[in-house]
Image 1 (tube, rainbow, N blue to C red):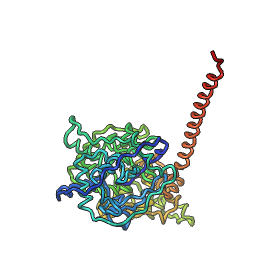
Image 2 (image 1 turned 30 degrees about the vertical axis):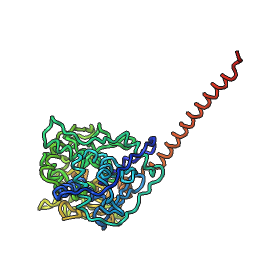
Image 3 (image 1 turned 90 degrees about the vertical axis):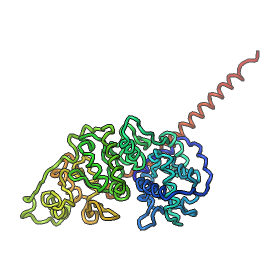
Image 4 (image 1 turned 120 degrees about the vertical axis):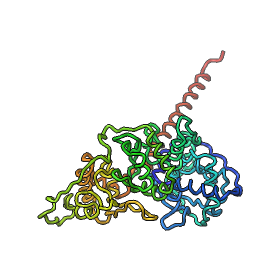
Length: 475
């Protein structure tokens, strides 16, 4: 029920042999629920970030219709209000559980992992019941049918997801570790399940399933990059305190470290900031304990790079060029950044806008997030909390973004980080084209040829054996 590459699990799934669909549970009226259980279900639904994906811009809450971009086409979120006509109003508790934890909707068809049921599979039966109570009794029904998802062949074969699930879905609920504290187990349950951290932050294998050996080591989301959040001191967030992590999850900002943007800002805005301090602390405890993943190219923490810098000599006595693409880094910084981030990149006086040095935005070697922030800015949709920044996609060209980005990394961040014009152009267009539809079709054709060749070989072998048998002289 949350966005992300969160659709990546569908990729190449159609290459796997089809499996039988799971039986559809009998429908029935929703059981009576207490107000306390409905309230708890609401809290769990917020922790799961359901509304972020199931609410279209300008649409009614949870009525679906939000297009979630994937390399094989948009997947439109469904109506999960208790509407009997267009939503899940006729779902039994078992059907609801199967949708949330197994990726099988009420009519028996399979969901794509744009809905992160691979993480929600960790949920306990009690929490599923509470969420069911909330969706049936605490959500206003909306009789509105969102746009249907139509992916190109072979990704439109939903049954193929059954085979993918057999390979990659661990449908066992979370089991507490008796060797860990109650707080650690709570954090593990939330991070692995409802808040589904690994859905974005874990890289994927060639079949687009998460790599357990690289859990939370960072992954590309198409345009944005979800960084390493393991406790490695150089590649991850090992130099963040537990309170730094709590502050970041609650406010979207950890002073002197970084600030949330893009999908992470949405997660904070819609979900994480609403969690209790105890739950946020539990997540932080868990993240501080997981295996560290180190990249040998990282020699310093992303938030440890840079220092105050001012290049007045690059401005004085120099007229702006007639061609805006010929503007220098100092000129672009003075025109578009200095008003808020000040002359030396030290940030606003009240601390509301962060310094550009000792900032993960300029310190990561992967500069996709830096480019996306300059293009799209940072906006919070609800109560106005968090860091705000305008986007410059309509004002700055690809060349200007690249020039400014390199100026920022060279003087305020990691000097090994680079921004290229091609990179900016690609990100502005929505990310690299994966050509996965063509690739999968070619692979399917190859597999089909191999299967036909095997069948022909078997037929010929049988024919030869029969020929030898019939050609032998009678005794």
